[in-house]
Length: 114
Image (cartoon, rainbow, N blue to C red; front, side, top):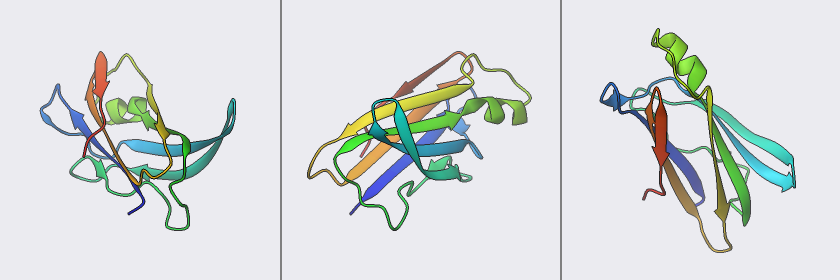
C-alpha cells in the first residue's frame, strides 16, 4: 500500500472541515519542491489518497499545505494562519502516512495517525 491521506477537523465547530484545498509536494532538493497533487477535503474532511496513482511513496521529504484562508473565507470567519504546512519524512520501507489536522481559527495540531 502506497498512501498519503489526511483528515481535517474544525475543532471550533466540532465537525469535519469540508472543501479545504490541500497540496501535496515532495522535496526535490533543498528549497525546491515538486507538486504531486492538488485536492480538496470531502464532506467528511478527508483526502483518502493524496499520492497520485503513478507516484511511488519513496524515501524523502514530503509536505502537505492546507489553504486555511480559503476555508475560513467560506465559513465567513477569520483565522490566524492562512496556510498550514506540515512537512514530514518518509523512510525506506514505509508505505502509509495518515496526517490529520485539528484546526481552529487561532491554532492547529497535527500528529501521525493510523
